[in-house]
Amino acid sequence: MSAGIDAYPGGVAGGGLAPGGGLAAALTEEPAHGASKRIVVAYGFWIFLISDIILFSALFATYAVLTDATDGGPSGRDLFELPTVAIETACLLLSTVFCGLAGIGAQVRRNAMYYGSMAATFVLGATFVAIELHEFKTMIDAGAGPGRSGFLSAFFALIGCHGLHVTAGLLWLLTMVAQVYAKGYRDDIRRRLLCFALFWHTLDIIWVALFSLVYLVGVAPR
Amino acid sequence: MNDSTPERHGDIAPGDELRPADVPAAVRGYLVGFALATLLTCVSFYIARSTIVWQPSIPIALSVLALAQMGIHLVFFLHITSGPDSVNNVMALAFGLLIVILLVFGSLWIMLHLDHNLMPMERLMQMQR
Image (cartoon, rainbow over all chains, first blue to last red; front, top):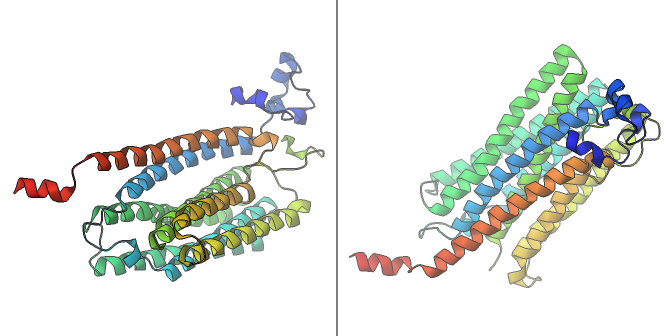
């Protein structure tokens, strides 16, 4: 972070220290480094999330290259069902809002807000995964499994990778509920919760790219 | 830590502490983000199937709507803003976007040209017989 300190115009104000206020003062007052531990943790986790986004962009590039490689088999136009995708999108968008509310609840230590929002987030996320699994099963039963064509391999890899991320997020969500229940709203627990919220919001951002550019472009008239 | 400074105002970076008095404003932020995201999603789903738009432009329209919605998510849900504590986050995001653009557009550019320069698969199969 040391390289970033100069980039904080007002970041050192908390310690009562003017920017560039002298080395001695900076050494004696620890918080003079501007960013709180929460901000540093969130920054580190944000770097991981960006690497995750890059992973998805590689899968997405593979899909984009292979969209027309259907080998005479079904294309997106034959397989994608927009009402299902709309329900999935609604589930994930609502769950991301509830996840944000849970984060607020944890910061101000309101049990009803925290546990209620986390429960809603979990139910909506689990619904999303269930609908996606059902969609995969329908496709595989219809003979359009990942082995059918290059297009379907890329499709299952891309959407499946997102589904796996959501499933992992659901397990993380349960862990965070258990940790808050057992240990209370400690600072370190709330930092983990912050990372979870960033993770969940990022999964929804990735889903925006997927439903727009995979499903909707896939069925759009050309 | 220094989040308790009273003169702190404006944008909240990810990781900023929240005071109880700020809860209604924070909730409102998520609801505004939700409303905007819902609106853009509905427009996307409508445009994908509509016939009133010039059809070759639909994929580009959908891309633009998706980008706009990602921006909404970043600002209202992830709180990646232009605030002073967010500078590092924005820089990391900018670098990530550079890599994403190179990866996606680079792959498409190379692979589509490769496709263009290669013999069609049917011809190749005929020659092998």
